[in-house]
Amino acid sequence: MKIFSNFDTNRKQDAYNEAIKRYWKENVLILSKSKLFLFMKVIFPILGWLILFVAFELIIYFFLNEITTVAYILMGILVILYIIIISPTCKYFIDYKMDFSLVTPEYLTRYNQSWWFKRDIKSSDVQNIKTITVLKNDFLYNITNNGNLIFLSEWARTNEGEIILHYIKNPEEKKKEIERIMKVLNNVLY
Image 1 (cartoon, rainbow, N blue to C red):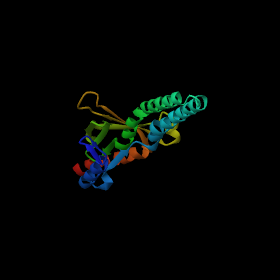
Image 2: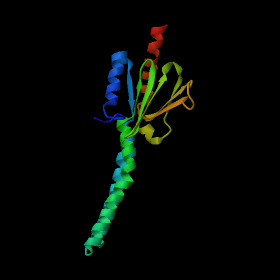
Image 3: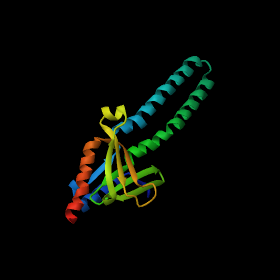
């Protein structure tokens, strides 16, 4: 669904299809945030706040049941407050659904949908990538087989020498696959 020119929910599939046409399916890898990100940044916060606000709603309902007008006003205020508090979670949901990276034999391209009106697309030439590191520095990362992929490259622009992809499922296997894809172009050229 394309709402604005910068907010296209089909962008991931379109970019993947374009890359497959150019490099073949076995030479294209799409990296997205794992379900751990969805649970930690979206589902658990929403449920936690929901439980808290339902508890407050029940307290208001049982203790102010004789003053119905005041109880309804307080309940309405709590609902509005709940919506305001969980609204930043929408940003994380957009990150989960729409942020991705595409690895091809020529480029590592990152697509970052910041909000409704802002999208960044940055490409790095794989020839400039010198090392790929897997970082699992969290207990939760280790038990769910998630991690960060860190790409160190010769930077062409300021502050772009390090690219970090967070919440990647099975990062060791992804690293091997990325290294294999990066070698495809070298094998063709030499």
